[in-house]
Image (cartoon, rainbow, N blue to C red; front, side, top):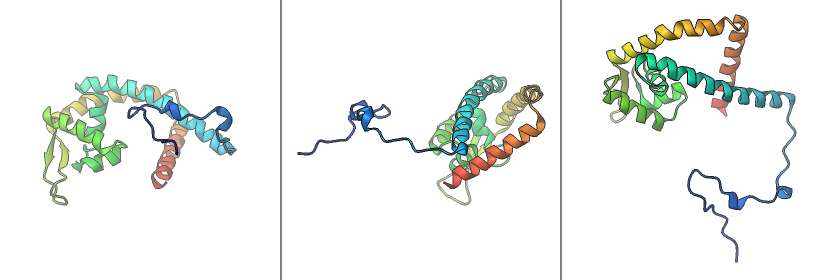
Length: 174
């Protein structure tokens, strides 16, 4: 009789019962120098993201919203978009955007509009109240970004942006 190897751990929790002894673990493949540096970039990006999200939460408070709401509104500032399109643009799941979009609409910061390209997938659009919240954030964000940027060489910032965009493109193609 074969043993059932399906996880018995609750959803979202690790299945520690199925962990083999360390002697049976597969070997980690050799990484190139670029692979090692990319791993360091990923870890530094995690740390940077945490610091940026803390700062974004504080900046978003100037507009009376959260950083997550700011992110979703940012996806529809220039034009109305479907929830899925806003999510792709901002790097957030459709489900995550949908939950926040519903809250933004409920609070009058955004609205749903008919989508001529798709009957069921409405477009999310920023309202005047949403634009006002973003303006209040921008008033605080401008000096903050300028102050932070003074500590880093402008050429390095441009190189960082180009590198990040290249990595995003590569990962989106994978």
